[in-house]
Image: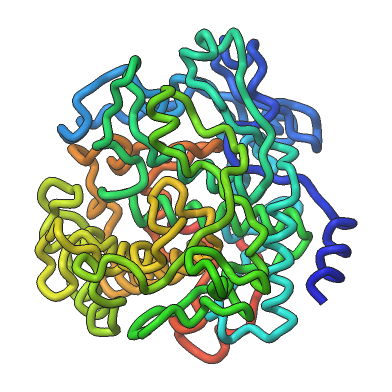
Length: 471
């Protein structure tokens, strides 16, 4: 059945999108620092002739940053994306995309006027054909080179300030693995020097909005790749789990009979190769991950450091997180106390809300528990469990937003770690998105979770006409 689905999908292949637009990586683009590709509909930059958008100077936030990264001008991700581009497409109305060729999240149709709400469901609620289709989509993404996007394999300096472009093709699944690696990699300071206390997507306020956008973009690319406009990422509800109940060959892969660190040969993902996992090698060479396969997916759930992570999160832990009224607090990093973000991320105790460097709980606990590829921050997205896990983390974020109904001003405007202020652009996304753009309800972004829906009627996927994008 899986092979049949995959065969059909390969015949319906469509283009994909992700990080550096292929249309913007020539030496001319990089030296002129402009990424305003034409929209295929009218061949004008950013679809300007059709009123979709225009090429404009980017407007960077000048809000002060926290003290965690004491450098300026040494990392390509600083003041993203200005090292590479200072002019990009700014889209109008409900249009979105690096060339304004797509619709904003939650909108559909040729003119992006149709409003839709898609529902993410528990993976155990999927029928056998639905589950097989999900696995086939993952495989297709793993075996399809992105037509629209490439990854840089050198820093801007190594590219001689753009005059010598250094980019590689990459498949759609690994493109997103690379993005998660790149956003969390150490800063390369030259020679053998690195700076580890930097991360544009973790350990600070943007953790939840960044991963929300990451899942939406991944979901969007699968929809485009397969032509399945109704596709949503399933979630794994791990509350009160005593073991990894999705770690079976029927679902995300059982354990190898002779090597407990590998997946069972009968597993759907046993042949997968991972990328972007050799972090110390990249650091020592002052180089970037280039997308080369680096070995099989590894996982040994439950055989982890139990002194650091004694158990998986409980329903009570989740409820305590949701009771915290402050989204962020104090230093706005992993030392923050009584912070909903820091407690859900897993750096603060889900019993007290006090930061505890000796423990990994909540979101972090699942990564540690998997005891393999998932346990290394930069390469964790190699394991497809990452998607299911983060979809459930996002659902907890959504519960908090609905319960506390925060104003945008609740998200810190200034003094957060680099990349995490409210109006900072998220690394490494092009088109550009600000952290604040995803500090809104999932319903305003076009999706909901089956277990959070307000009424039976919301189980039905619906489409309505809309003229304004809320939030």
